[in-house]
Length: 118
Image 1: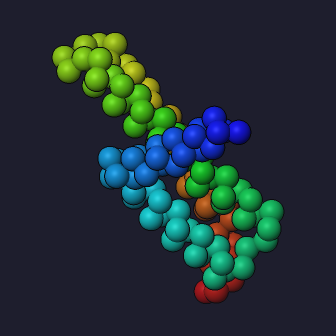
Image 2 (image 1 turned 90 degrees about the horizontal axis):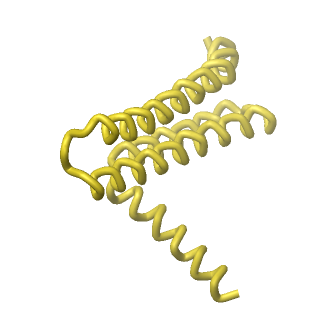
């Protein structure tokens, strides 16, 4: 049981470090909080909320993986190598795709609610 508890502590430390080290993660957390508040104000359905929550976590997870890849690549080499560029750019592209997915989900869910308000 101690191993499980330690693993949980390491994971929480990882979240804290990711937020401290990466300004993009802080931005994604802020946007996620704003989106959750908008979801509450617009009283979206539970089904829609699940998609919003999935989108927020998907972006945060990919950003954390991107940060880990970037930090590891920098640790291995500070030189401008083709392979290092591929690692970092592909990881960044994953975040971009996750963010685009989140924007599409948000657009599909929020626009009908916002149009009713107009």
